[in-house]
Length: 322
Image 1 (tube, rainbow, N blue to C red):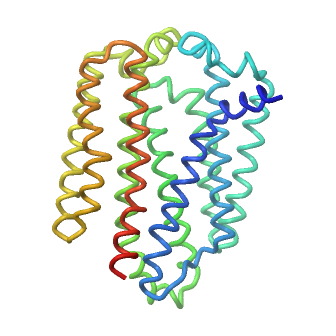
Image 2: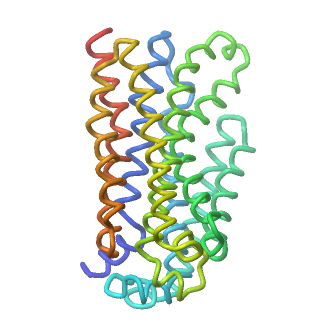
């Protein structure tokens, strides 16, 4: 029984789902809620609906992980045979059924939440996301760059959703919209900064994972960057993207220092910039799948500490300055 539960936890990427929940709760309770209160406002998007939004998002994400393993049974048998779940510990039929249950449940909950704030059309986000994770696993991940971009987009969407639903909840009350929209200005700017952060770090991590899985991907007919252009060129492109990202971070950190938020800047330098610099040096020397897996793990840690910047900012700005 314990082994079966563990198998489902791994299939659903339980740790990743917890991370998704953490991101959404941090965006709401360490960015949206505090800044709304500085304007003597409270979020127009209720806590109950927000919890349902998180559940819908987690269900769609979990469905994506399941269908990915369903279509990757042959490739996983080469790249990670000792960790393969679908077709070994959980049947393909059960995995396929689980995908549809999670996708439909996530879409229905998302549509309900959208309906409750008066913008049922927002529910299409969850339906489209369900189709995207399905076709990503079936087709897009086998096309050059398309699969990487789809994953990066969906990762960025997780960051965007709390602000997006807050905005449309406010938009549903025209009499309050003009009065309160100014409170969302700084929230919008910070949110889109982290949307970009999530997109870039996820895209780079996808390239590193492609380096790790090159042998199995080539056997499975996937046209990833390493398969199409080779390891050396992929490492060059990946490192170039990281260096540009570090430079962009440096500009943002300098702005934080100028506006007297130097402690936030120093935190991001230590927990984000320095690990990325270290990652560049590791990627240059990387040779084996274990090397690339280690680098991928560094990126996951960077993403985690990057999101925690909002918590640090909250403590410094709202606990020490207000």
